[in-house]
Length: 305
Image (tube, rainbow, N blue to C red; front, side):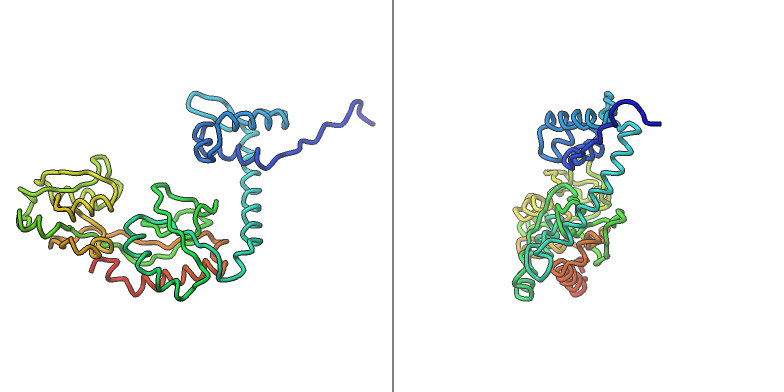
């Protein structure tokens, strides 16, 4: 039996609206989503309102702590993530640059690895692959390989996302360094580093094992500078300001620095990471192979040996 009245209108979805909904679900609020997408939060709010009106349902609960998906919103977010994966895969497959050893490869890593490991090898890489340009990002954020913020990452932690491929390259070693002028003034440190000046990390920075190790070894030293930047700590040590614990692959390149004999500091594993879809691309594969070979022959230098 036919029903009275017009058939329900089919909702037409805009991919940008779904992207905004995804960003809000990931960030937990309009302001954080706006910062992540570099869009005015008010614009995201209007697009969400329009999406809810279009779908005739509420997608997010507005709570004091932020925006929380409703059951309908959670279902939409799950669909949007699958669509995002498909869109991303199409982009990977159809990129014209991906057909040969040409184009740009974006590498994200820390400043010490960039300056001490990647940069010195660039002339060799350019000679081997003249069609590939390298862009290095030493962003304080962990860039998202899945969203193409970078193609390759050199990270000091094992990747945990299932869509990332990781390969352990070796270990990064740390040692204590000071300038020759500093050591001439104050001499070699003894146990506890009494009478010496220390260049430390910020007080609350304890996420890496090197920090508590340094504070134990140099418990009697006077802290003169705190910085989470290895480049800043290196510059301060080279100027004669004090003793710093630095990645050896970076500090050993500086002729102004002298390594101080001490017990061995904790090392960190170095991982070569890319997205599984990117790993098939010729220019990405060539860069991965080059970095892996470089790490193999540089293993002792990486480890500070």
